[in-house]
Image 1 (cartoon, rainbow over the protein chains, first blue to last red):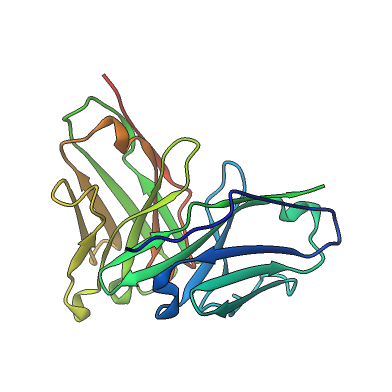
Image 2: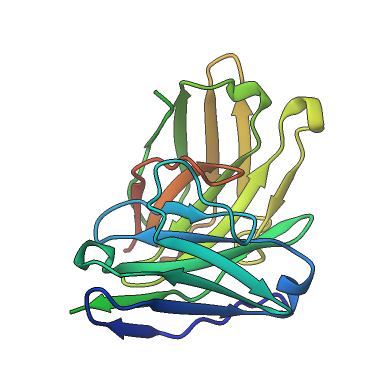
Length: 107
Length: 116
């Protein structure tokens, strides 16, 4: 089945490293993207092709992949990184799927 | 500046129809594959569907919950993407976003409320 599983919440103190995982069988064959969404705002792409960072995204955001799990890492998390984070993958050539989302708390 | 602006949202009764529009600017719209994504109140993101560029066939794909009820189309002469929504259900209540297929550009969204 095409499902992506994320933890519902992750909490870190400012300056610590936050890691958010996303698991699903499809990730063994397809790239993942990561989105940041703050309240009342549209999502913002922060990682594509598992580990590529779009221009304008801070270097503290990185991505990695291993088997059926991808991980978004925020090194030295800042208060402004507090947001919901979603992983996404093109499940097959005809549809896409999002993970359920992870609420990152930085305090 | 690359920009997507959605419009057409509103309040509609169950069983009704609504057409959303997404005006694109700042890039070659006719070459772009485009997608719709929605977000129900307090819930996560949900992929709705996608349309390819006409040069790549212009075909569409849909998520299971909307297949047969929603239709994505495009007018490249107007740089506009559409989402025709028929037989609306209360569970279709959401903010609807249009985005490029690579999801690197998003509109601010338009709100659809399905309620009697």
